[in-house]
Image: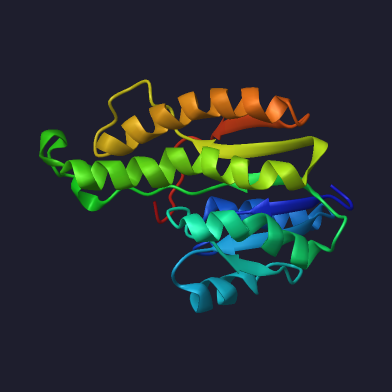
Length: 194
């Protein structure tokens, strides 16, 4: 990954999948741009544990202004004329009403909709925002979890992951016009904050 520029979303703790992706990418020579949401001071402290300093940009994937300005903000930190080679979407969220011991049928629509927006729709939003500043031959990668089984306690997040798989197929179709790949990685059960 020497000299490659990669944007990584979703670093929350140093046990998050995104943190370890960022760490390995830096160790392989990649230059990173990180995004975080809400607790920016905490996320900055976590990002400071990476082998190399990386710029941290605020990104709320539900905020249209954040998405509309993202390409310009990334260009500002990687330098005019430079482009991204990769994007890692490691964003997932489902309110507690849609997961855990809560009954599947009791989750309010508003909570489910928010979870699907953040966990699935945002994959397309992120791709749309960043494809214009990606190099041909680059890739977008998202984090998946096998949604083919009704997993205990995963409830509506399983539905969101099914949606993500469908969204990925359409993102791949659109990204292909830019010479960019789009793939999901199903990591399996890993103990993270999610």
